[in-house]
Length: 81
Length: 306
Picture 1 (cartoon, rainbow over the protein chains, first blue to last red):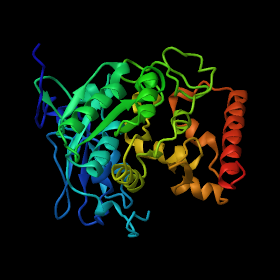
Picture 2: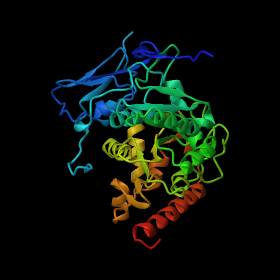
Picture 3: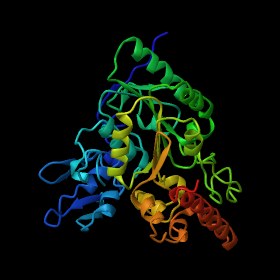
Picture 4: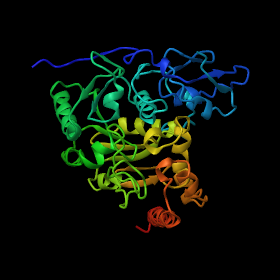
């Protein structure tokens, strides 16, 4: 019997950013780099660089980052069509 | 949170390694993927995940692709712990001592369907970690009641509210005299990370349960996952502890409650969730009574009277 094997791929479910209704915007002047948004992002769409960087190709727009930010530096804005 | 080595841990100290790839199939705001990301940061790449039927089997996305960047074995609902025994035996024969089999199962696959296999694997002393991410219902199949669903909660099979109490799987597991049992939740990533690290350094069967508040199942806004998890601990609905070789220690906020900090009123947690919307005042009284009973029991353990 042949076993079905899947290969690890980024975007295994496609560009999940298209699911989004609201998108997060970071105010870098306010950001204190506590990295709470990074650790709590269910989609691993926020990466650690000089400052948090959001990958809009895959961000599903759940709003957790905005909610856990202690200094309210992340705002959720409605997607424009 | 103080780490094993005595240093203060902060979120910025957690490793940047990522084993969950972007673009997986989880719902927006999914707690299971937050938990799995933190777990795999602690366990590292030398891990074989064993995933029974549960949300995470779907989160991996579609064949021939997967979003999990560690070897993963998908197995039938009831067989995860038995499969882990097989993987552990194979690793022993191959003399791969640094590879760790880890079961990643939901509460349906642990509390109900997989309990027999779990109990068997624990009793045999299989060298593995069993992780149950508990969202208190069968979320994947469309929100049915499980053994972990709390009293009064709505699900599609208990649409007037569950009339029975949930069981305490961690206490059933403790009765197997295994080296490590712990409970955690996603709102405290440092705590979860430390517990995983601690479990990784031990031998024999280890069990960790993670409370994962599910937005579609519990009926709350998807941005409130972390808040809901935090409130569960602060109101006492969820308890954080670890048991090392039979010695129970409370951790984090739960320890502070036992040291005298007031529990937040349980209504704060209940009113945020649509699944408790139908509750009558007498149901809330019953939930409070059960909660007080549970905490009396913990107080006795904490005071060393039991």
